[in-house]
Image (cartoon, rainbow, N blue to C red; front, side, top):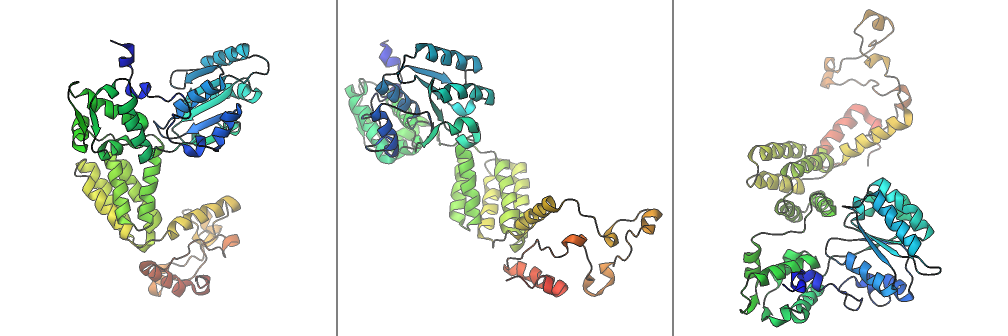
Length: 431
């Protein structure tokens, strides 16, 4: 077999120059920051952060070729500290006076351990190598601060529809093998949707569809054909990656923002992406307590019931109680007064330390404790009208502190009114 034919389509179409590079105009378009540095023939160390298949590795290779400088590659998956030191030593020996520093490209740099990242610091700081790191994860979480401070950070975006269509047309008209086939792009919605803005995935899907058709047949790409050939929905969803946190964030914020449609959409994205049902259910419980709270205490009960139901019945029926809880939470009145109250209390404790418990509300299980005044003067609320009697419960130095502030949703207003009735001026500062 011709060696070229063994290469995947994505590799055969990998751009060799910036003029062939598709997308990321905010970085490499005319007048963009990275383009200016490349044209000037000098770059500083930087990290490329973006989803898979948007051109991080390709961009690093184009830069090395354009600057005509040695290019070393390490994969964080397979390389250790020794490999890093070996490459740095080679770069140091191979560098000539006044020549541009060799480029060290580290793919998936977020997978490097702290010690591996530490081993890079000296070489980057002294200019022995110019580091280009690529990551699909948020560098602020995964890259140590000293290394991050020595690098510029450039964010790459998922490829837009126009970029993907340009890439598809380039594939069928310029690839050495595909241009010999009769290929018509009649419909592109499915292939674009399945690619999720990932150029590599897009070309892999195209190649799969074409390879499953006889070489002498005309290929008419339709949405139905793509769906049939894939036999699955390869959604861009990584349960352990950045997308995971972005989608659960969108889900919770949609509930908090009282948008049941958006909340259901993000729920569906998680379900289709293979998210663990218990993870979704736990987040619903947290949302019920944090965002709905006292405005509708039943929300917490329903979220907890949804969790139990999902754990009992699993998929696919588990989607129904999750959807029920999602809609209920999204359409419920909102209050975070309990959430803010406990955070305020924790802050007060951290600022004031271990304040003594007032004697009347201390426990007095022994005679000695009673003799010392423990429990002395305590008024039992159930012995008084309305099951309330005003007395001090806070430490002496904190009697004027207020931690819970009602937010006056219909149900919470009743709680607030009761507190004003009990405590008078202490609660009347609420607006």
